[in-house]
Image 1 (spheres, each protein chain N blue to C red):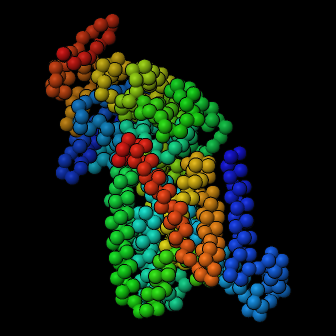
Image 2 (image 1 turned 120 degrees about the vertical axis):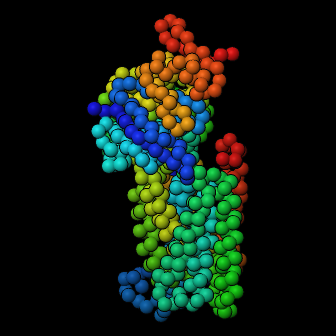
Image 3 (image 1 turned 180 degrees about the vertical axis):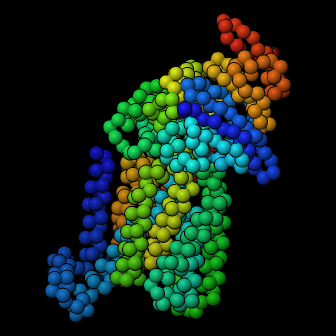
Length: 340
Length: 256
């Protein structure tokens, strides 16, 4: 019942945010114009470039909104799964350095100017960077299948420092164009959205999301610890490997096309848990909806808060996510018998 | 045939042997209590039986089946384990945690709900079924874990093996007694029960057979009368221990 209500609210929120996002912007469009444009381009096969409204909507705003929805959903689902796998509510990809790792991979591609050779290269490199970081964090931070809060956060600090050093070095090597590209990308922005990026993100997100849906029940059992989980007939190491690969895949593609957008994977699963409880059965699909809403809404703010400028979207998620993280950290450290 | 046997088990960490040629039997229908000083290898032995540690040598058999060749899910239907750590990482309700016991079974069916209800009843957790597990005390969490284990072991019959690692360590005396009586009842229904305990007096009261471990080996195993001798226990625990009979049963207490 409660799950149904929350689902309904989130679906309505997705639709509402999309409608709002389509209408708002430097080039405001009335709902009537939007419908007219959809009719022209979709049903009458008009070239979007022939009409100013069509051009804005179809080449800029629609892909941007679609990318925001997909990247938000991907980041939130990755966060939910990562927290389940680490059995720790603070295991957010950006905290433990997964985003930073993905950023090293993606920066390398951008600096080498290799992104033009294949559209899959950027997300592929980001994915590899994310995997390397996650494996390192896992090796350092776990005891008995649960990652202790303090080790997790401290490992994350070290990893983030190393990864950002790597990124800085690559930026230093790059030429001026590449540098500018990397720096804007690092702040997190959906402004480079193209239909090609949307397509790749859609493919990878769909694959990753289906994977996460399949393994979401066994992930619940991981919160009992490795010993109980394996005695329940779960192949703990195999499940963990699959889950980490999926989370990195999702994070990698979101980072590749949206840049560093922190804390989505923390804010969304945490809020959903408060509403429907921690079971991944609901947490995974609802996080996808919640992430889509959050990022699409944040994107409206980035485009409209200051006229004629496009603020980095990472700012907004960090403003909400940072304090929430501190709150959770405080509660976890005090609530579970100290520095567990 | 049921039950579980470990034979010639060896587990090493680096060069150190944690378990050295350990042979233990958990026969169907009996309560086997494993005792021994800290670091004797009790939990490691139970973890081998639970399948969460792979031994370097030796064979663990569930009934007639070698654990190495038994799919994890099949094994989990016949053997349920309650480890020492009863912490749960997320605020699941007690009922949700207990329902996780059905993981190795085919999925959610209406019967599962009844099985969970019964397990909650047996562990006196019914009133707390909707509480978040993270808000419970250590002893209450252990009872929830026990309910989960019973849920996993259901239907309890002569094929079942239930292993409990210090299940009562955080419980008050009343719930500790109730837990050990419950273990006896499950044995009466045919299950092989293995319990690691620190309380030797409880071991003497509830066990059909006792395994005393020391330095990674089985020091002595047998009936309560065989194992619970003042010299043996005082020697192994390096503290004076008194053993006496009263009301027809063996009592064990430190000599003070």
